Length: 249
Image 1 (cartoon, rainbow, N blue to C red):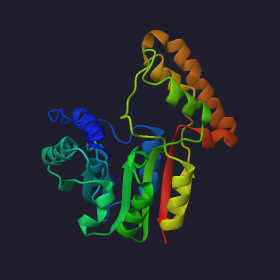
Image 2 (image 1 turned 45 degrees about the vertical axis):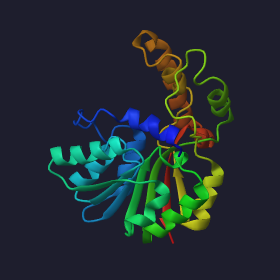
Image 3 (image 1 turned 180 degrees about the vertical axis):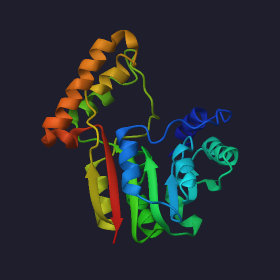
Image 4 (image 1 turned 180 degrees about the horizontal axis):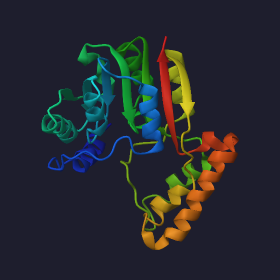
């Protein structure tokens, strides 16, 4: 991640005064992550890309020994302030995901939400992740997905143009199948889960901007995604969101 991307995320998390955590777990992907985690009490857990600190806070509340890292110092400070505000202990550091070895610690579980697709070179990170997990440990990540060619065409040609908002930095790219293969090679078995199907709902986010004036159309697009989720499992792998579970061998 370059200094330009870092500047983008520092700006995103600059407001450290908002310390009240939003609901977590909230989305279907959040709930899948929690289900996969199981009982976290007493476990050493690392969150990569702690962002707003909500996942780390949830883990600490449930008895985990939490370490959190982020490239953004504002994010780290927000996470520490959240922990202090809720009288919980979280270790948080400004650290690049490629520098996990500097923590000098192995973890039972490593988690992250929409973070893997930011990390380059991923070949290097895959080895870092393997070295940071205990034998039998797991990585559990909520991620986006580059398998859907229609979404990728829209991303490359529409987002950031024609009044369509761009929510990420200029360097990120959706998580790729080749990166999943790297994790299989360097770490261990990989399971992919699709608790939600996200395709048509992206129109609600980018075109309608979740404006309730378009509620009828937004419900229609949500209904199309739900239809595919419930009755067309062959298309699940083309969902924009997925949960990636990695089992260290």
